[in-house]
Image (tube, rainbow, N blue to C red):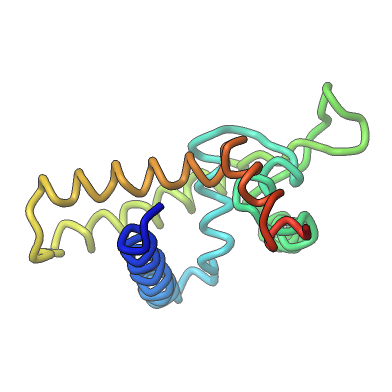
Length: 160
């Protein structure tokens, strides 16, 4: 990768991190009355869109520690938004799934976000937004790939 490409990629990462923090703050403000944090919302979304999963599966998909996801799941269980059910594939790692209350809560959160986004008028075209979505999806796939794992293994990131 050329130095110019590396600098451009670094700029994309920088702006992505900045946007992540802005969006987290917007989400926290938007959902403050629900007592559902942005992290809880993310777990609810994963379960709503991908179905029941184990805590380790959710942790790998983010990637964060299993303990972090377990803390969030425990809070959601206490609120009655998710439940733990037997996992036929693994005796010691139950599946986490939405309850009816969790499904309804996520639907309310999602509807509030959709109303807010409908009011948004970013100063970029639809084509630019579509390109941005494709680029971010491609980067996400790459950084989860075997090719990236090899790069990491041969760099200071991999402990070598």
